[in-house]
Image 1 (tube, rainbow over the protein chains, first blue to last red):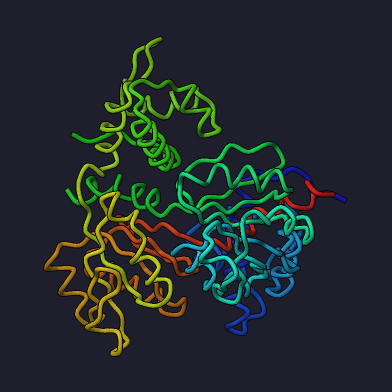
Image 2: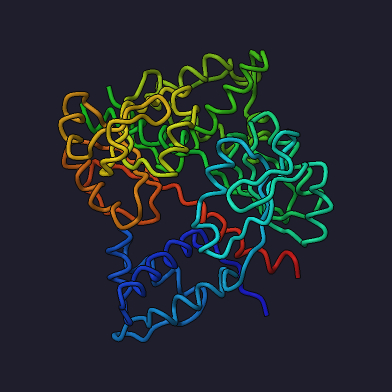
Length: 210
Length: 210
């Protein structure tokens, strides 16, 4: 059974809905509404109802959504009702920060190993994770059936690392290097680029301050 | 003189174009084309021409774009042809990583100070930046006419910190806390949420691996 095609922009909002639902659960809430979700997220309730309607009926008109049920449904839809094994490539400052970023593990994304090409780092640990030689990466990916990887290497190395990961069977890449990766169909890349986000906002600075 | 209204999604792509142009300049290139830019970014050349056409004429049909000229124009459009002074709130692990993230400074975003409420941290330094008491934040923002801030505090504190920043005159917030902020008109927020990005990709994992 396979979901029908849903616009990627809708898929991208589901993790945000899931996040809010987790907060509501932490607050002890049992029922919510598209109105409340919309207020918390600064988007319209109509948008939320429309987004969710791609996946089925999650609430009854007038009674709202059962928070736990909707959370569980979203987890299933997003395939995050399980543990995802990841590797990370790059044991520099950024890799160090990410190895200590506890939200990965608490959200079910487990960094199993970190790979680097620096002989001084190979064999040591970063956070809880061992650092292995990048030359052994393909075997590790194969042995552990890794599908997800985080790229935290310097810009100049990112393309080669991505190519290697994809060759080994990785299909989802979270790329922290500020470089756009061209990938084959069936492989997904998401980018984390804080500078691009800042530049997006400075565009609006003049009109709002002058 | 003010730019006409441009779709926000187009504005969001400009930093990516700028990034590629910077690489082309580093490679010693003088001329490029919408085709080449598109190939590097995995988007169509028509999209790039359409995006750029919102801002004027940057190239001649058949001769392509002058790389330096287009780069400079984009910097001006994005208001990044200057130094932006920022503050960061939160001197934890994440703040530490961001204080050492050299791309901020090299892109013209200068973290002038870091604020925290931990007395053990106040008065010390993180990276090159001093850590001040969050109680002194309003005065610092006013004295230095700060418009941009990075939020790197724990989730529970993020809303209050954002409210305080906005009250003091900050109009652009880069928020690393996994919580959606409701802000008044004229204030912009961009989010960095790697877990949401991973969950966006896991959605597609099943259909592509089964």
